[in-house]
Length: 175
Image (cartoon, rainbow, N blue to C red):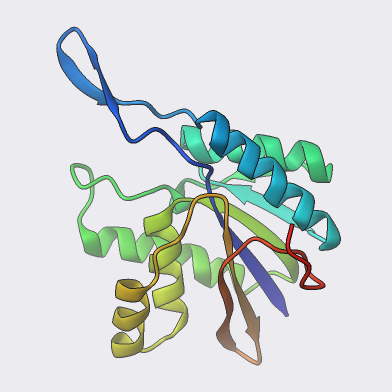
């Protein structure tokens, strides 16, 4: 069996800043994002996490760095769990990228923390249903929150969604 803990990166600023008159989004975590990431990392100490995989984009990297220090586990990057960039890929290409990642995860065992982005989590959850109608329902209804995690398990050749937008310990105590 494999369990994926899909962690959305910490809060990032909503405002854009202007650089030479060009609006750009800040990509770093806010102080609140860093603080909430530390809280969720402490709650993950009650899990036996075997591996950490992170998106290689800045906010996910920052989140993963904070978590890995607290739970004392090294991590690796996987560009397949980056957020979708509409100017670089189509929606179908993004879905196939996420599907490829999920298929590789089916070959793993243990508990894997996946530090990624909201759209990627929604897409992975939708794909895990293996049903177009159910996947669309999940994709449209799930809104991953900053520094919260969703859990899916792969057992008996089937993915099952266990929880969405959680920030509590394995034994159920809120942190």
